Image (cartoon, rainbow over all chains, first blue to last red; front, side):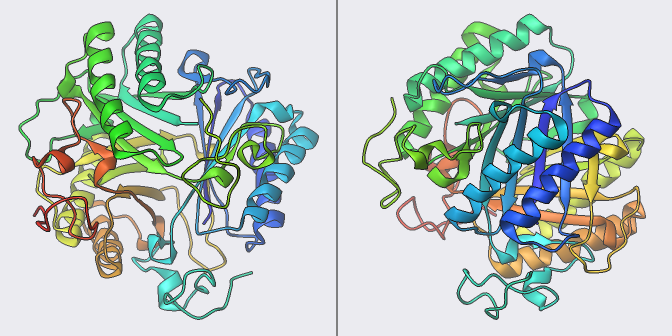
Length: 145
Length: 145
Length: 145
């Protein structure tokens, strides 16, 4: 957790994809302060006609390098989210040459009980991982980090 | 926002996909009253064996034209959602010949802080877009539209 | 409902995919006590470089058989979720030879109004399906099952 799905237009090399994922993970590490191996990334490449990403009237230009980033995470503060947007845009620009206007993000939140990282267990509930400080009643106030 | 993912069986032409997306967007414009460029659509085609969509015992018949529509959106009223289901089914039938029984929808809600439309910003929080009237404390009571 | 998306590395046969989906559905039937035709499954195969699934520092080993399972459902109890994780891991091990460390799950919840199973209707609201007992004010206390 967080689990991140990247939708983009086909045609990038493996190296370009690896750079994109590394850059996004660095932004995530800094913004959400998750452990370094808290990394769950899925990339889906599409034909151009299958990705229709406009701009809500904001005047943002999209190119063929547009990336849609869908994040599923336990609750995060507004400040953490804003930090992620900023750091992600900067990291993709620096490491991948992606224009900041080409990075769109949408986050959906869930809770401690909604994650199993393997072995048939809900590790946030069994004590193997710290429960969220923001979800009263679901565990100790320890935060993983 | 809303961000919509369409999962369907491979084999449609680009024209058929474009018609599907246009029809769905028209339903969205009318049901949720979003701006015309508030359009974020992703289509994924699958081999038939990779899409297993039954009917919860309702007696609804599915064909190879089945479409699963997953919507991520800020909160919408029950009336808006019901309107979207109705208009979407009608639009896909009229413009694409899709049977109403072949259109399944699932919605997940998030909040103003969960969206960045580009440039590393959370536009619902920075005032570039109106914050949701339904989320007290997150901004002015203005609604985009 | 629930709607389940499986992301995995390409290369499985149709038979292997069918077994995976059957095993997952059996776990769902037992854990969430849904009707037998309450089955909505989507499988997406990826090149290995497009799926980056680590272990949050838990020491869980991932192989090329890793499966990421994203569930969208109306509210479920913590006990139901834990039961699903356990049963899913066991079923995939028994029927597909998947190691329990290769099964990761993430759940996102929504409500009665967020589902249309076809025909432009919200069946949990119209009385064609029982509304959730856990969502006060959305319908009778009957639970489908």
